[in-house]
Amino acid sequence: MITLREYQQEAVNAFFNGVRSGQKSGIICAPTGSGKSAIMAAICKTMQETYPSTKILIATHAYELIEQDAKTLKNYFPNADIGLYSAGLNQKSVNNKVIFAGIQSAFRHSFEFGKIDLLIVDESHRINQKETTQYGKFIKNLKVANPNLVILGLSATPYRMKEGLQYEGEDPLFDGLYYDISVIDLIKQGYLCPVISKGGIDQIDLTNVHITAGDYNIKELESAANKPELTKTAVNEIIEYSKSRKSVLIFTTGINHAKNVCAEIKSRGYECRTITGKTPAGEREKILTDYKNEKFKFLTNVNVLTTGFDNPKIDVIALLISTKSCAKYVQMVGRGMRLAPNKTDCLLLDFGSNVIRHGCIDEIIPPHKKLKSSPGDAPVRECPTCHTISHISINICPECGFVFPKKDPHDSHAYEGAVISTDREWLDVEEINYTRHMKTGKPDSVRIDFYTNKRTKPYPFWLLLEYPGYPKERARKYIRMCKGKAITTDDALNEAPQWLQPKRIEIKKNKETGFYEILSFDMPEETEIERPQTLMSFGL
Image 1: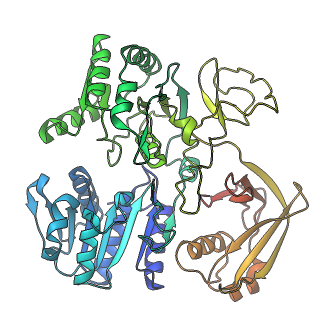
Image 2 (image 1 turned 90 degrees about the vertical axis):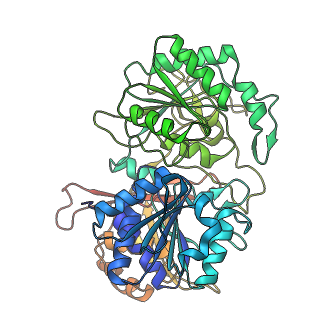
Image 3 (image 1 turned 60 degrees about the vertical axis):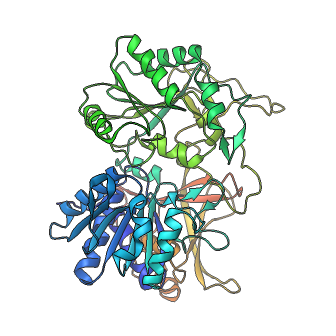
């Protein structure tokens, strides 16, 4: 039996609150390792118990995910009426109350499923906005059968390179967020392991690699990455850094590249395997099973294990690939962030300048429909001695103690890159002020001003109780934390003076807007201020 974590239950509640308020589609943004399958299972169980006639379809792109999600639901809800629809699994059930389907098998046969009330898409960032794609055709036909279809997407990266966030802009795929779970919050709470990063001594030379469809041209990229000398030096570093580690997952640019890296590792006397899109299903399953059972340590792959692959023992990720896609970058790094016994962190070895290009995984700026240009490089730098990558604000390397020289204010070419951001600051709260915030054409909200000894201006925070979706859930979360019960703006303004008040706030400057954001609140106990405190993060 699965017991939901607090944030998982909040995500489930947020979904149902959103649907009750009329939101027909939305996303639960949940990092790799946060337990998306448990959230889906709880939603299915609640739907089936509350509305027994409800029919639910969970769609995804890989049969491994189908099996994994179905198994989780069965563990959480043993009485569930479950069916599978997947050519890869040799099953095509359409009459069960909960059906797990592979989109490749199902999209041509959408009308066979009858009236679907709830469509859940696992790894929903794979949905393209065009109606001519597999998901586009499938969703269009499901809406013909049921115009009131509710759609829930789950993804760690709900954005696409050309389309931006999937719940923004004109004619978005989803109406908005149901809930957002932050990476840094899960690391703080001990649900994900931290990541440390080292840039490879030799990097892929991208000089002659062009951009095709928003990312590096795959043939040119493989040509640049699949160089014998680069492969040798990269393998040297991978083997050296992973001596005391258990499981190494290596991302490569193509089949030949993956095989060459694998052969180089084997030439050093280590066991290594390779998985590509052309690996037969039975062989692939055997390789992954042996890998999880630690029968060998090194595994190379080509665009196969980027999403949906679950092996908590992975404690080294090696990127022998470059990508312009921040979603792909986050997904690859996420493969190593799950918890496992005796695992304290995951080491990221980057040979493609991806950390430098995209920055901290907890503060990725996704493609934004309103942004006409790139937000620029990440505010981080690499130690020249041990190649550990830290935030630009760190003056002494946390790994080897190297003291970074002061940057020339006229030099605009600082070396940059990072994995977990450190430019956050805790401030003592001296005074709190609550006011009604009114904006033309928008519902009233509560503005909370936190005054600290940092500056004379306050740090604002808004409670958007009258707004749909995630903004409302975020406001309710704050009120619960303060031991309040308000559900409307008027209620909040009336009872706010009696709320438990934060002692400290954690702030960070938003690189895109230039304004400071409040990330977390440090709450005292109700009766004794010296008791242990509770940290509450809002995933910004």
